[in-house]
Image (tube, rainbow, N blue to C red; front, side):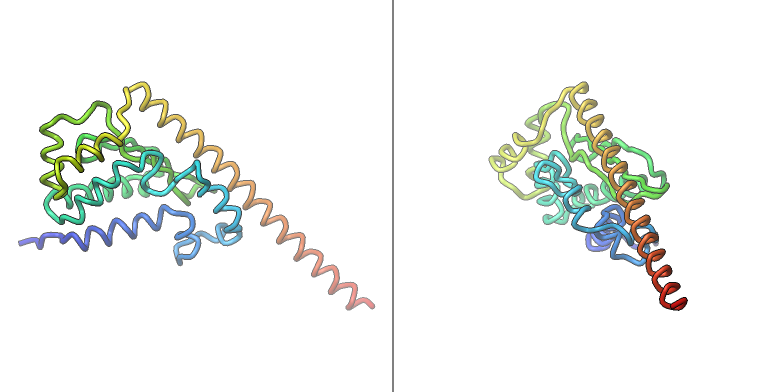
Length: 215
């Protein structure tokens, strides 16, 4: 009989995948491609973590992540569903390198937009989870049961989650794609500039050694 995967195992798998899709974690890992070693972290931080660009997994709509965290803390069946949903999305992004709009638990949707440099995924932008319609009373009752939160607390958190029309959701996903394109462009040129600087310094060092040797 196949052993059931535990909450802790799912959390560990999700966290490992998340690190592989985060530039800051990737740069410090053994899996980092050589070209990333030239990235200036101050530049990367200014590019990716500005106040108006919360590009962690909570994305541009962080409110829904509170419900998912509460669900995982409760450690029931829905907790596994939430964790497996995150894992499935990240695995698909890593495997294909393609944009993905994913159906998340509690009737929400989420977009993932990988940042590719030199053909490799080095980071990912997340839309965050959002809804295309308000929560029904039945859905909020299920969330209360899954998270252990009071009905009033669930209603408060649910009210903070963006409810967008299909057109608005499409516009948000398109905005994420444009942001991703800008980040790819900036990172590509930064890495190229760093490499040219390194080559120039090496050339000057070699020339200086040659001059000393000739003298």
